[in-house]
Image 1 (tube, helix red, strand yellow):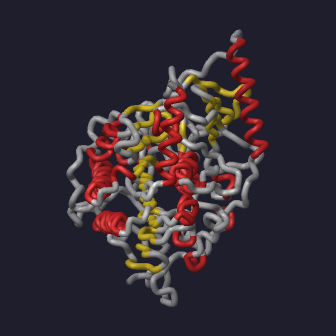
Image 2 (tube, rainbow, N blue to C red):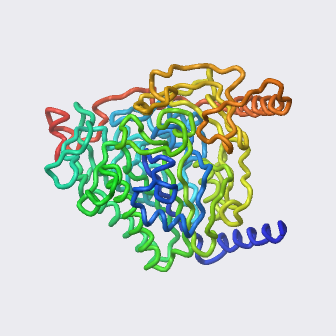
Image 3 (cartoon, rainbow, N blue to C red):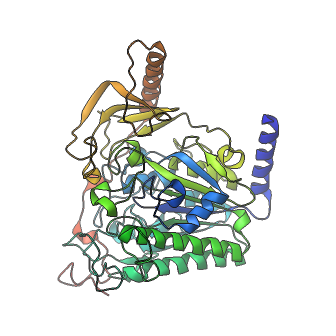
Length: 501
């Protein structure tokens, strides 16, 4: 049986790489979405019919991880297949005036596919740097086209960030004293401030037109859609506002789901859906400090900002009609694994650098075993002195350090908020995530030779990995320059108020 499965897998790879129609890829990346937020993951009041459809017709992951509990580093890892410590996207996140960004010598998924003739486009939240004259924008990282906001949508005044109807203010505050949030088309500011209530429709039109144009040209394509939803503060246009049962968070989630439905419909209408891998996941766990407006980690512990599973384990769905059979996988996988998987399916060459991802094709096509042995967990501010905060090996997760985060405040669990200060654990706290996914009950190692042997294996894996880790120069620590923040009228005065067009 195993030989038959491998034969089928090899036939599929040959077909994908040698046929006249290489596979297309649509990668959807939600923002601050928790493990328990989707209807198909058990939330009782979320309205996500299109994601639920993908889950029912595709492969749903139960043990899928991002690499950081905050935005920018998680996005860097997704696009490069490398831990953020290698590319220097740490500590924390990039800002409108950040001097640094994702280094141009890093190779993104788009750059892996370009030599094979793929059309590439990004639409939505970039958050990997803007830089002087747009140095770090997607068009400098392998994407033919880009439409979106180059950083998080709360990194500017809440100029028109309203719910529907327009006279009802959204819950929450945004940054002040900086430029209003711009909408970029490639490297040009198309609108400043952006109109949030029509933004998702603009994104949907751009993305569906890209798919339609590529399909008409019979050109393989890669569409990367990193959504602003469901990052706080939430917003939604008239098509979704007030239509969910979860208030502003549910409305934002519904609007994201609606765009996903538009993408699926377009894939169907253009006749390419059976030749397209659609992959959905999220950048990090929910921002629990926002309470009901911040998302839900389900039964997982804590959320955004922490290295507990609530901050790092994400919903993930792979959808490819005719190729991926419906089902659920409990195999461990990661955003790191998306680049090598896409490269394998497209027949592309891997970057000649240290990769941390593994090919997931066997999981997707045969519901088979994962190549991934372990998952590493860095905090939001990694450094070589402390090293890993946690490590998962098989079904076991070891915490060498634990710490709460402001993003995970307000919960009854005292381990989650910022008041839970850094604690070192020697021996580490070890949890059986199959028996205890909420990380409530650390295993007692006393008198257990089997667990002592496990501890030695964990330490050896940790030591080998940390010996291989070369920290890249921190891009975030390069600081910020207010003059670098995008302004549609760069010579105007006084800034930032004059950046309006």
